[in-house]
Figure (cartoon, one colour):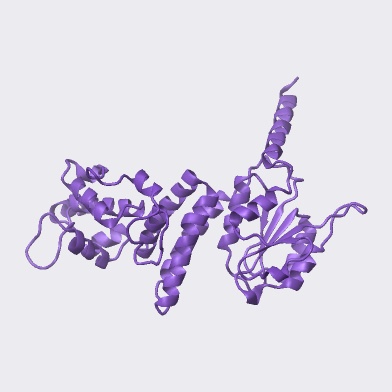
Length: 353
């Protein structure tokens, strides 16, 4: 009965906004700016949205989240409603409009939901618009598509990080507004990064890992999660200890895991502990007479160039950190190939009579 009533009478603006995951104000602004309101208007002031209208707004959300400027998305969405069985179709952009692939290749485009983005990839603008309207499903899809299409490093440096920085700047300039936007965006970025940070199970157990840790008092973990995902993409094992690792626990983690490298993240000068970094860099492990120490990477804007001493490096970005760590391993892909060979030999031996 509910479905029949909805089909016959339509639903309110508030109900359609809840279904789309946007605010009623957004729905009303789309109608006022772009003329994509209900096709049939009833008596009184209240709008009633029929299934074809709802499908049109769903398409509007999908297109804007993929990076299409709102005006173009509105034209395409309106065209969808004019097609038969519109609730089940996906509209093509109107003739002359930029396709999603073409728009993605451009670094200019429409606004990013009111965020100070500057000149960025279209995926970044689409992510910003989805974030501002708190559209979690759209953010999840767009983030995963970007990683799949462009790789982890490009996704982080050119889409995730710029959008996070823009939300942070907006938050600082609007008296703590947009906090909810930053939290939801951070959650979905973290979800996609952790999904990517799964090291190939064929990496030999004896391979020295990379220890990743935020210094005591440091809560910013997303850059380290991006590094963990990038290392997994290169087939290198990690041990992620997360936010605000106590000094004693950090020293114990390094001594017990015997890492090839240790990455220490500091977002601000207040958490950059140079003395602790030197202690980590001097931690030795291995057999007597052949003891080694890890390479320590001082990552994040909190570190100064003066903090770098023997056995340390200060990478200026994700790609530089990945390259520095990868150089410690003979050939990351060769490690996987050798492991695959070992597993193949073992499987053949087990199947032999």
